[in-house]
Structures are given as C-alpha cells and as structure tokens.
Length: 170
Ligand SMILES: [Zn+2]
Image (cartoon, rainbow, N blue to C red):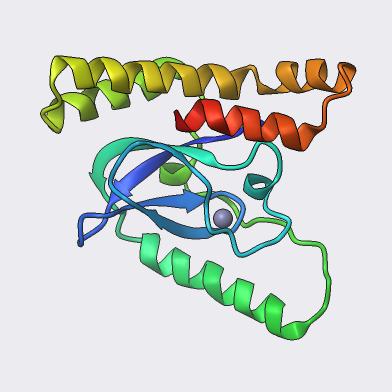
C-alpha cells in the first residue's frame, strides 16, 4: 500500500482532523501540513506498517457536518471489537468522499501553495514548504520501487523504514 496524502480539516478549536481510511474514524493532529504517524486503534493498520504514517494536506475547510457522527460510529465499532475478544477479520468501512486520499499531484500541490499563502509564509518559508512537499510526494510515489531495490540488496526493511522517515521528517 502506498502511503496516503490525506485532506485535513479545521476543527472548532483550530486543530486539524483527517478521516483515517483504515480505522473509519477521525484522527486529530496539530495544524501544520506534513508527515505524521497516526494513533490508529487497530494493530493491523497499514499506517503502522512499512513505511508508516501519512501526509496531511491542508484543505482550509471546516470539518464536514457529518464527520463527528461518522467518527462516533467508527469508534463504537472499534470498542465493540475490542470487548468481544474475538479475532475476526476486519474490513474498514467505506470512506466518505471528503476523506478520500488525494492521489492527484497537482491538486495536492495546489493545496500546499494555497495554505502557504493563506498563512502568510515568507518567500523562504514557502520554498521550504514546497520542497518538503515534493520530497514527501517523491518518497511516497516511489516507495514500492524503492522497497523492491532494498529487498534485492538484502537490507532490513525496518532499517529502510527508519531511513525513509528520516528523509520525511527532515
Ligand atoms: Zn487510523
């Protein structure tokens, strides 16, 4: 699975939330675009496996009206599964349109540029935001290719994951 670029929405308290396509609920983060490792409630979450995490893209929009209701439903499902103690296969619920990962580079880049301007970044900061986005996009987009090479070279995938995260968190 290729790591996701997820649209982030502004909450009433000014933080950001994304819809986790795996957990079927919202995850909260600080109001800043970039790479995050989410607090997924499921041990099987793809965001806790290689290469771990996702990238927040700022939409600048408020959290959609239905989001909190859907979130509660997702959390209830999670709690029910935990309490039942049964290890049933888990399949994530459908992802609402507003929560779907953004796979079009120009849309993703446009959101980053818009955020840069709206938050009054200096020219230097804007350049940094742009290069941070490009690096993340390339890491994410090329991830499977890179992983193949790493496997062929017999390098431990965990070492590779650390390396990738160093790049993303620079
Ligand atoms: Zn999650």
